[in-house]
Length: 70
Image 1 (cartoon, rainbow, N blue to C red):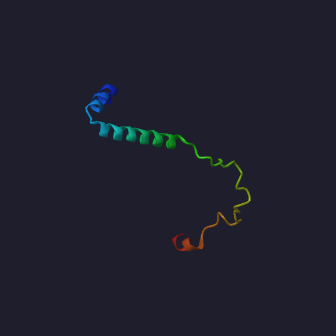
Image 2: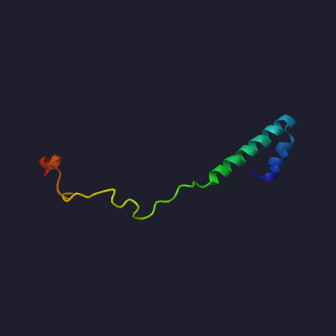
């Protein structure tokens, strides 16, 4: 939307509604700032879960539940 058109529409509003428009614009600015804020969570590093999971030796063996289908 063109800024001039917005300006013209804003000028036709009563003063009480202009205050509401200003409040809404401030709300949108705050919302935009929150969207840009980065989470301060540290990024996981490669290998950080080492030792938390163990692969069993029979990992590649067929499961007993599927013997009927083989």
